[in-house]
Image 1 (cartoon, rainbow, N blue to C red):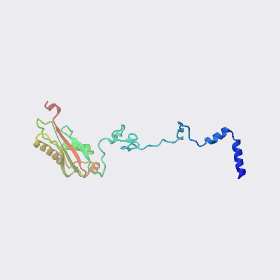
Image 2 (image 1 turned 135 degrees about the vertical axis):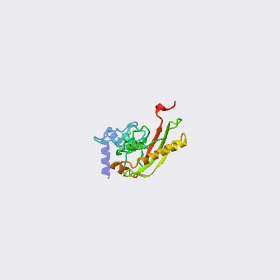
Image 3 (image 1 turned 90 degrees about the vertical axis):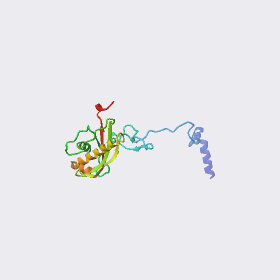
Image 4 (image 1 turned 45 degrees about the vertical axis):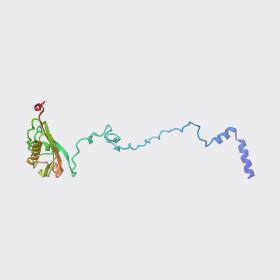
Length: 214
């Protein structure tokens, strides 16, 4: 043991002051204010993808990294009427009919947008009173595959202005048009897609601009 202790003392005495100082500095923290260097990521690595902010939904490839109504670049294909999907429920609004709508001449109805013109051929709206410039009624009904009426048309909304008796006649004229134009000549594809599924048609009545009172 004494031999080992003497050996350690001789080695310590043989070291220069600089070497002894370097040995003592090992393991000390860096000087105040220094920073560890920030190295770049290795070649081929990617920056981490952070989660989207709260309230936004990640949608890769759709109008940018995030989707939301307040974000520029939102995929415009999502805007507009929904596509007709076989087997789903209510189709919703499929068109509008007014006295200016061109009447379909009894051909095959191949698209939802053709239902309104097909009904215009059978619609005889009452003349608007002189003090009324517009009226409207929404009908909800459904058709079978062969174009026959499935159930009865139902008024879901109507204007409440002007003469109540006129509004009643206006709504009745729209219902009568649906009865008069059914069975409707539906194409096989459209008939299979809408069979038994309710949809809505809006009937508008208005005075032409050149006939309105100033």
